[in-house]
Length: 97
Image 1 (cartoon, one colour):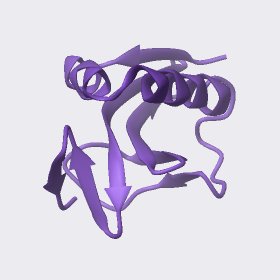
Image 2 (cartoon, rainbow, N blue to C red):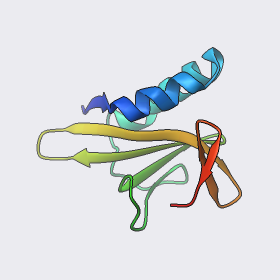
Image 3 (cartoon, rainbow, N blue to C red):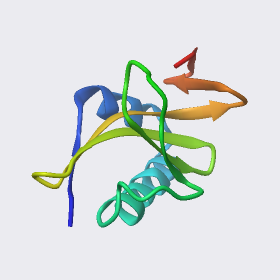
Image 4 (spheres, rainbow, N blue to C red):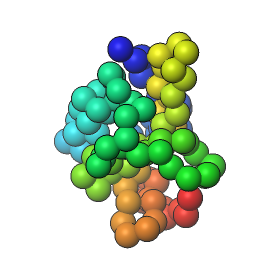
């Protein structure tokens, strides 16, 4: 089982969402990343080169960007945002990865 840690930036991203969205996001993180965070699936994929993270988890329109260290079984959540089309939105502001 993996330990899940959040960067301060990810926590700030999470606070931007409404309470029911926060519950959905945290539930999705716990459900999908605790046991097999490196298994690619429809909702979990390895990302191309970007400034934030190596992996992306999809929870509805929300995206969780994370890195993992398999040697010590730790996941570090880097950013949490929404995706509209090909663009990511963090705290309501669009960014290209």
